[in-house]
Amino acid sequence: MDRTQRQSWTFWSPPGAGALLYRPALGYLWLIVRLYLGWQWLTAGWHKLTGSESIGWVHSGVVNGKAVHSGDKLLAFWRHAVAPAQPGSMPQVGFGWYRAFLHALIDHHAQGWFAPLIAGSEFLVGVLLILGAFTAVAAGVGALLNFNYMLAGSASLNPVLFLGALLLLAAWRVAGYVRLDRWLLPAFGSPWQPGWLFRRGSAAGQPDPQTRRLHRASGRPARLPRRLASQRRRRTALVQD
Image (cartoon, rainbow, N blue to C red; front, side, top):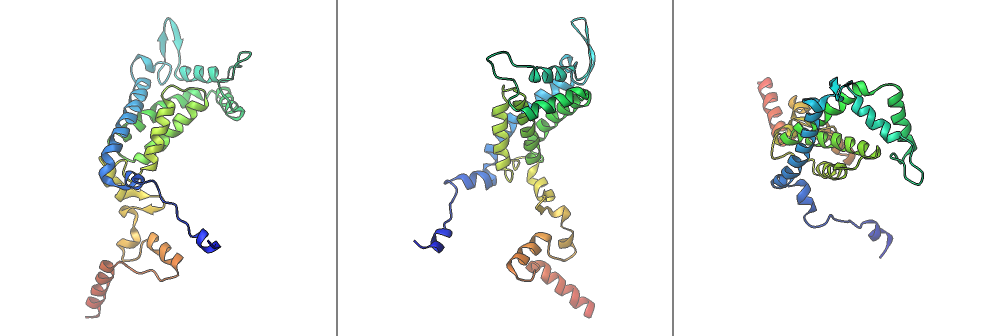
């Protein structure tokens, strides 16, 4: 086998993997993953935002006769994470740079605004995942939260939630198809492929940026789709008449 043949090798995905990530009909499978992750995030954020458990997160109050300020529970979590390890045991935080990051948050008393940010983010991620709205963004934020919790030494459900978020990110095209993303994704699109709400050029009778990039890469002039080209010809004929 010569060099040209070796360079032309193409490796395909396992059978069924493409359908799992791209076929809208399998959105019902991702609905189960979304609902599970969404419920976990929704309840976690709800308890931090409301009720007696919210004292120390977003509200101040008195617990067991002691005054508790908003953010104190998060501060206690940070202090536990950066506490010196016992002789012969591993530290709670395994990376020095992340320990320094937590120390900086503690020194600057960031728990006052960081705790409401975490609680609100958890609740919002849960709502978006359950509704199937902007699923990729919600899964990305959830994965970021799980990643930070695990860096701080907290396991619990975080590895499972992190894996679920990664799967939703891989299937971002169809993960929210059985809910609002069925309409939101075509409307808003993605950063590299804007949806119809942002295709100003196409609406004005011009090739959209994606079409222009593809034709520029191929060396061919950008052409309008057949329907838009016929509309332009009819308008030109009316003006000439």
